[in-house]
Length: 460
Ligand SMILES: Nc1nc2c(ncn2[C@@H]2O[C@H](COP(=O)(O)OP(=O)(O)OP(=O)(O)O)[C@@H](O)[C@H]2O)c(=O)[nH]1
Ligand SMILES: [Mg+2]
Image (cartoon, rainbow, N blue to C red):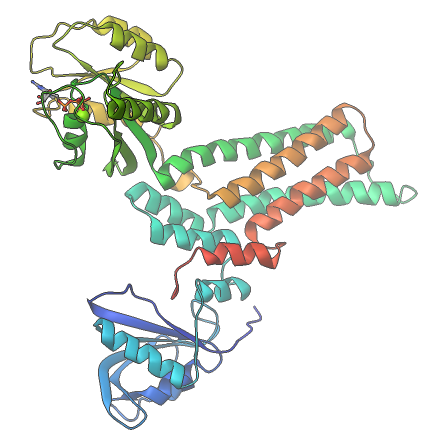
């Protein structure tokens, strides 16, 4: 691996605010000497310049006039065995906002430049320490808000997606070069391209690519959380259910119908899966202007949510309003939640069951039935038996590359079906290959790389 050691940059890598430890990281060809100018080891024999890679030493950060700023432990990593591939120094000092900023300032005065967003990871990418998809995995790891999202991000960070993209690229490259050789040098002694066999093999590849995209859809729910709207007519206990799932008094609950007017949002995790919960205004015909707007918002959430918890009052008979709701829910991912099961039941459970397919009885008031509801949520989202490391929780850019690769491949298969020249098939295969190489960053414009790293925080 050839490592390009660039100018030295520095940044605070820990979050701003008071903490036990604050870390300032430097990378670049002069990282060790720049840090050495402000860091004095307690043991004079162990200066940074003489430390081997992966070693740490206790010492003091001092200004150039010798005044001490803080105690610190300095860790040295020597190129190429570091996160960026360059020489790296991590100065771990006390985590006060003032102390860390002083240390960063001294690093800059000693010769480092301030790092831009994601610049450490960008250098790791440029030095071949990770590909672009893996770099995005780093970002997802940092952003993960639940166990499943974390495991999925780690899997991408470790290269699961890259390996699959690589396998697809390899297969496409073989087909494409065979076609190119066959059409460019027909007089040579080459194995002829068997169109029928080629079509079969490309169809198989397309099938695998489409399966990967389907996993990506599931992965999106794991990554970003499933938007889950709690919907129903007024007073059925939507807000009480919201509060039960959140474990706090998030929404106002009263016995007056029409209490909730706006969408109240909160995130919770269920079985390691993130849910973006939305408590909404009870749906009914109303003359109250504020409530009307609330109802419109409920309806729009009903349209856009990944999952709907349709709440009914089990202690009452199904009303016309409930019937309308069942109509609205046709064809949507929803669970019928029959609430207030601490009271005698009067509701027609069968009707809801028939209409929505899945029904859970619960008392949002006492919490009885909560586990069954959580199980049902995971089942409807098809995440109850999901192995997060297998889901391919891809970001939009990654999904876009795969979608475009699949489109090109589909075109290639169609061209073969219609007996169009092999040249045209080759062009489609090259198009697909191009998208797969963009996914891993092997063939990608600077603008795309800039865009990927602009999402990172400074210091990563
Ligand atoms: N017995 C019983 N009462 C409940 C239960 N859940 C909610 N309630 C009561 O039902 C009434 C309405 O509850 P909310 O949670 O405000 O109902 P909502 O669906 O949010 O109502 P709106 O915001 O007006 O649409 C309150 O008096 C709650 O205490 C339950 O499981 N059992
Ligand atoms: Mg409410």
